Length: 468
Image (cartoon, rainbow, N blue to C red; front, side, top):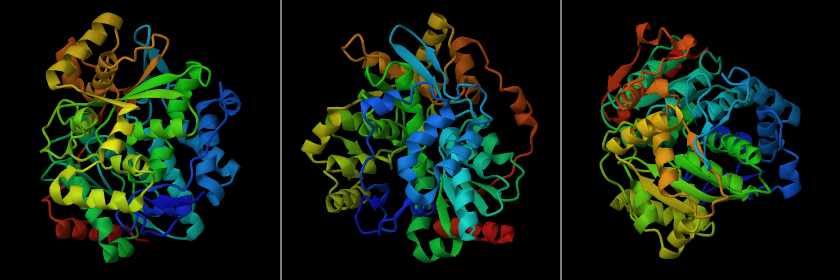
């Protein structure tokens, strides 16, 4: 399996090369040169497998010769062994057609664990084979940071610096990042919003001398390995509901588009996902695009669902590349103009191809609270604000076919957002016992302005301090 950049100017790589590179040198994102496809019979043969086996089977075509089947299987088994539910990603039925796919049973209580627990092990394997070390830099709107830290803590060949927007995550999200006492972990609170953090990370990757000096690697969903490792949970849900003989729809609360892109990738592999419902909060760039081809950046407005407080959906570039018939030059031109003008000039034909599969829906904070309350009253289900956006989107954009079930990505444990859940239901969800002392742990983080030189200086000092 070889991988190409969406902008066409970076050399093709194998899976290991893409894993360690993250962002392509031309600023683009990597995608498979061709999509593996499974026949209906092959999908049926995957029914009933334990989650770690299903993940290994589906990821096998993407890793190519970078790992043996035995190595990959051992990694997936180890990655998911510590999850808090034996099914790893259980389904909870909310009404006759809507099912919550619970993706929050990992160590940091968010869907990012499903990918990053595996990515950390993939990093270790590749670095040991090469005799190298890397510096992981990542931007987080709330959940990626803690999941990456948990996946990479204490790993001998990895130093980690995570950037989060100061004051714009929940307290639980922040403390999950800043209370980890591992020497290879550092946290930066950036005086800005998530997009400022993401821009700083992209700028570090674009700074070729710095990138080479630090041997930078990415844990954000700009890293293709993150997307690939999210495909199996959509397959698990669809197979449990009767696929490939019964199609499904999915409703995904998302800001950066990576989570729903993984569901789309599962469709490209032959899984019958007929409709994709994209849930947004008040930061509604994706909903506006799908409604009126308005992909324009606006200032980020903090909300009750901070992991979606994003003005620019980086992963949309991968879908754009596909919508444009894999025209890398056209993709690069559109992304360059978007960066300069703040509005993405997507051709109408490409936009219509998107709306043939995708629906958008945006929900404000009051609507989010009402949805959390309604779910609790109707079926006793405690949903975090992001999941509530997904369930509300599913209700609002319910496909007309009454036989089509809708899988909602339940992306975070309600205890990560206890204030919002208590406000909506009167119930304050407790943290799991293993995290009960979180509020008493010592925090460690530094505050920096939106300044590339200052951030690069911090990363350089941290990586060198931990170099063996």
